[in-house]
Amino acid sequence: MTIEDILNDARSVVKKVVPDHVEITQVDFEGPTIVIYTKNMEVFAESNDLVRQIAQQLRRRIVVRPDPSLLAAQDEAEKVIREVIPAEAQITGIYFETETGEVTIEALSPGMVIGRHGSVLNELKKRIGWAPKVVRTPPIPSKTVEEIRQYLRTINDDRQAFLKQVGRRLAREIPAGENYVRITALGGFRQVGRSAALLSTRDSKVLIDCGVLISEDNGSPYLNAPEVMPLSSIDAVVITHAHLDHSGLVPALYKYGYEGPIYTTPPTRDLMSLLQLDFIKVAMGEARKSAYDSSNVRKAVANTIPLKYGETTDIAPDVRLTFQNAGHILGSAVAHFHIGDGLYNVAMSGDIKFEKTWLFNPAVNKFPRLETLVLESTYGGYHD
Image (cartoon, rainbow, N blue to C red; front, side):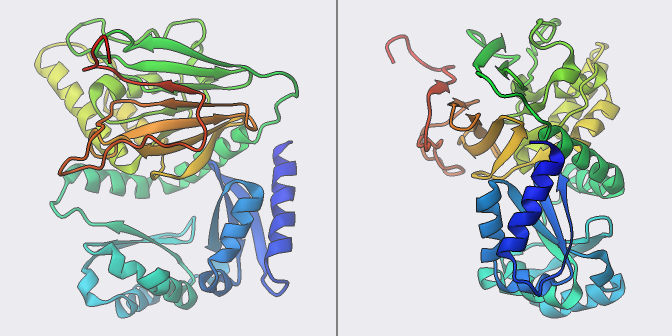
């Protein structure tokens, strides 16, 4: 199917599911998500079941946003937000994104901003028109988190253009015929450090992790392998967690020709940016040349599409990704790939912790279906 076929299919499903009196003004791609713009936001606010039905029929992530003509003035909207949300939520920041019609609300108690069954958010949607997005204020102020959020707000227009480009690449038409699945080891196999693997199908290439071997000057994965080059041919980069042996060389991809998205969890995006900037600082302090600079780190942040645990999304025309908790560090994930229409399922564990700790639940080990598991074995024994 072409992108227009997919969008026409989406419009047909929306028309079938949504009541006739609801006015839909636009349906478009934004990254792996289909965005629906409407002049009747209150209908979707009162019935979450509508979005669920559309998502199930299209088998894609769905976001509903208000038509720009409905948005209340920012001063008035902020006044209503502070009036509706309980003071106990402790709002620390309100940021409007006119391009998307979203308002980001930072609060120390995001649960109180959301309300029981989303009641507070639904009330806001009806009264201000803007689509509220809630994020937790870090209990301990983090300069890195604050700067990343501020940076993403300043490049909002560029990011929207990038997400539209990603969406159209995901919807490209692929020919019929026999498919295959191949995993190429690029680093981190039978060694600790520079973890990287390439998941290839007939029509797609996904790079899983791109770490660095700190102890060696030439500690990069085999990114010059014929299967990998050119870097612009890679559809997506998936990062399982933020440690440098799994994410330390990601910004260098943008230095040498990669322009696509990075998929990871929200904590991993922030943590790996912090560690990558520290990696540059340490290299400079030791009079060593770094593989990239801070501009490449910013590009990686701009191109990151964060995913929560359990969210399934298309990352290539024939590959879907779901992250599950890995229990290793904050934001660490097991990456589960569903390839084709039921053709094959692969899970890449990244680093895992297989028991409950004071900080994290154990790694998830139950999947709907799995043919291949690539499992880290750093502390594994020969007879395990």
